[in-house]
Amino acid sequence: MRKAEVCRSASGPARKSKTSGLRRNRNRVAWLKRAAVILVAGVCCALAADQPVIVLVGAGSSVPLPLYRKWADVYNQRNKAIQLQYLPQGTNEGIAQVIRGISDFGAGEVPLSPEERRQGNLTELPVVLIGIVPIYNLPGIPQLRLSGEALAEVYLGQVKNWNDPAITKINPGVALPNLPIRIIYRPTGKGSNYVFTDFLSKTSVRFRERIGRSASPKWPVGESAERSSDMADKVKKSPGAIGYVELQYADDDHITHASVLNASGKFVKGTAGSITAACVAVEVPAWDKLAPSLTNAPGADSYPIASFTWVYVRPNPKDPRRTAALVNLLNWGYTDGQRVAISEGYSELPKQLVAKVTAQVNSMR
Image 1 (cartoon, one colour):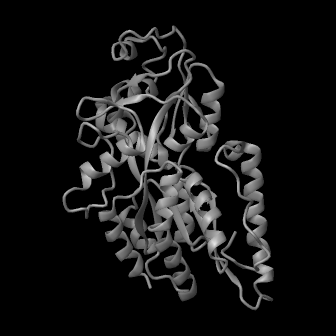
Image 2: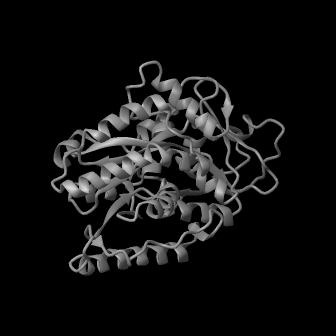
Image 3: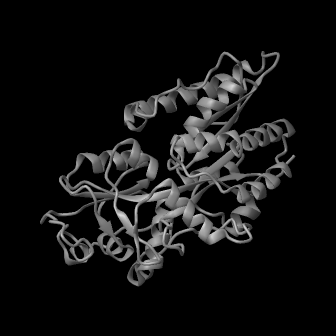
């Protein structure tokens, strides 16, 4: 697949409502096929077009997929000269594609390594705040508490049943069933793995020593779910299941997610407000860290599995037209795009951070 400038007649995927089947495999596969057809068709028609449309192609994590789809819906309507397409292929693949020049930008939840910055001349910019929430399927139990230590023991295979003392002791008065825990995890190269294992590594010595922080952890137990939507589907359909997804997937699919013990000793539910609180606690007062990790942040109101989702860009691409188009898209993303994100339930970036980031964006010109 390669970047392409496509004719005005090659439109993006049809707009879908938030409660439509975005999460279902059939619709996702169809959407990816349409995107591929559009990009391939663009190679041919760009040669004949008088005023070719620039299609900016992004690839990366499925964690922010609902955001990028919504952005494409809105942005592609307002700016017919520049169009956005986003392909969910995993954080590691997103970084690899932008390094190789296949896509215009990558996206994900893993900070760039020094080698990736050097090799690809890449910069990562925070786009919005996200929260990874532990989702579960326990009929009749509307609210559960979990700690990082308990989650670590579950994913290490040490806690096997829902009525294990590691879980019951932090849920007094809750009649937990003697039901096996069905563990669902993400495969290699996923941003949600990185954020989740970063949190577990900070709260469990045993987890840090055995698995550690990684986008590609070697999970000792459980079964894989390729994308965030697959994990949400598996947990929703399987009594006793546990998994972890970005908050929007849990909310959109009406899947119960647990409150999580934070660094101040309080159990906090993942919400737009509690995710923002984690960012503020880490970034004040200078607002210049653009911190690679927001997990287990201080503060009574901080949700402990919070993170930035990043966009990976080249500061000095060779094609000035594509550079200008990318700068246009990003400037929109940090203004109107933030308001779109809020309307979809995401936590916006604090304005103090937006000022720092937009200065970096405009230096790309």
